[in-house]
Image (tube, rainbow, N blue to C red; front, top):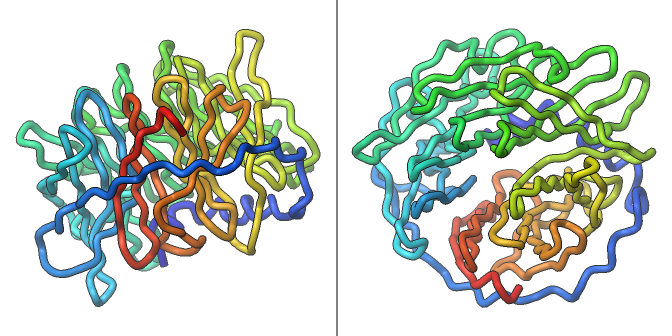
Length: 392
């Protein structure tokens, strides 16, 4: 079973509730322009050392003139090991040295990467142990460029109150992980060098309370601290409403529940577009965007529509200039979409290969300047492409 899917496992039941609205649920889909066809150019990721196996890609990031693509290698027996690649121009890629410290660290697959000041921080995991839970590790990049595993107690990410560890974010303040514990949404605040993370569990307004059950998916650094996104399941209801949390330090949080309709709604990814937070998630039977404006959060455009029997999800959301790029899976296939008006309207962009929905299939994006990169794992092979994003 995919480590990434197991980490998100507690969310799958709730996500499946989106299907209760049926294909016709939710607001009507915003009329989309015909699909554009970027001139995708293939790039080569060199084979990692350590023996034969299939490279897998799970996430990507860029900052300060450095690009990172991360994932792992799966061998013929199903064994895994971590792997990551870096570039100084987005074109020529090299393998990063990886130095695990633990039994499960040597079997990690990197699932989330963020970077600040040209250095990467990562979250990886491997399913294992008597109960088959994900064994989560964080990693940091040291002076010689190598990725080293950060030692942490089992209870930091596991233990009796563990639910999942979602995504890592970076910013001027440092590093932040969001995820969920049995008490609801939680955060892990990292030291400036990513050498230590402190669990914030049961924090007022971030955690579940009498208002409902909270769930956090993603976060982003802002000029005033951190912004996390997710959803709240109100008491007595079976559908989530979208929710955001703001914090100056990743420890104390203020919750805002956005107006919700009768359909299932939640925010799964967030990015800044020209300094303005835009979140994308599920809105009934479609994907929807929400944007923070001076008077508060407003619902923006919708795109796509739930299809097939799989669980719909937003896999990636990045921005560059005034453009927003999203990768989603609608339950049947993966697709990528572009917005030039902060989520108000969306246009599908054709991918270089078709990627059906399924276990161990991922699509992730990076955008820098006028270019964007697409990393794809279709379950049989991993690939990386770039294209000019200005005309999409």
